[in-house]
Image (cartoon, rainbow, N blue to C red; front, side, top):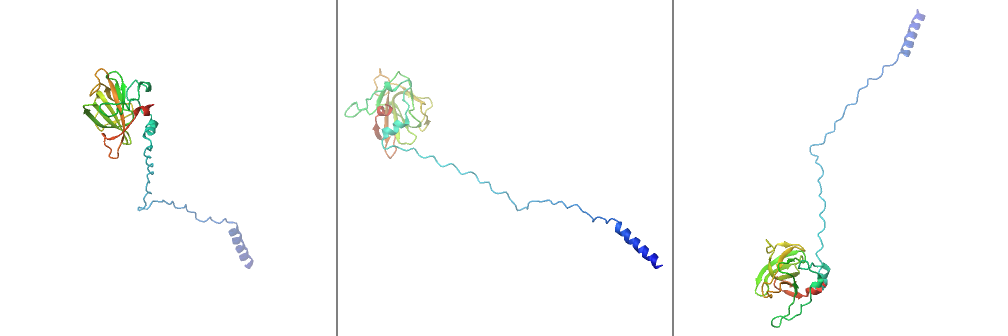
Length: 209
């Protein structure tokens, strides 16, 4: 009886030894959903810094040299520097000097702006006839065009003008001889009050030549 019991227990032990163990219960990992918090905001967009302002034009102590560096356009179409002459110091009525150059050309030849700027004044005078005063881009110089036959259509005071733009036409208005159409062209270095009628006369011949 004892022997039989011992054999039964041995069989149970062997059976337990050879029975495979059940694997532990496996569960799939839970998926995690990440949501931004309601108080989260995107970082602010910083605009690029603006470019530095352009340096203002440098005005030379010598105004003639300053204007030479600008390479001004001749004020009458279809002429060359050979067509201008130095009559800046020629005497005129009374004790005054001419203080300009006369550019001869056929009547109605286009007169053009010598550089960019703006129309300061359209003026009718007894001596100059139909005239135009132009400020340069720095408001340092005045360009004076006189004895015009007329202005370019639509041109008004304070209008911007570009280098080479037609602003008027050669004529004989004012005290110009009726048989000698020409442009009376002058340059003035403005005084501190920046008035179109006031300044120091500069010789245009020295500027163009």
